[in-house]
Length: 112
Image (cartoon, rainbow, N blue to C red; front, side, top):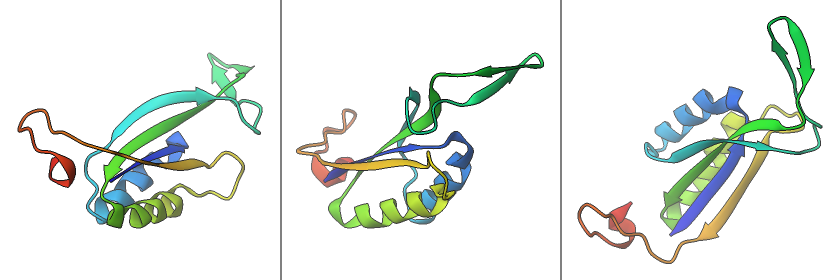
């Protein structure tokens, strides 16, 4: 089993979610994150005034998947998340030793 972590643009989330749904990924965790990158922050407008932020706002998605599903998840995220500009994000894959579903006690792939 693997854990797929992707940091993506907020503006691409709906497209990414739709692509993941097409391949059967309907559950994942997401959180709003901020980072520092090559873009040197973003410009925000608040009450008519423009401000330069020192950070870049993004979404972090966490998806647990079986090994055979990982390549299709990566393809879906890159296809829907790519704009071709700096700041499209990153995908990191890590090995998962064990997953346990708390409600039923199922272990491994059955818990996903």
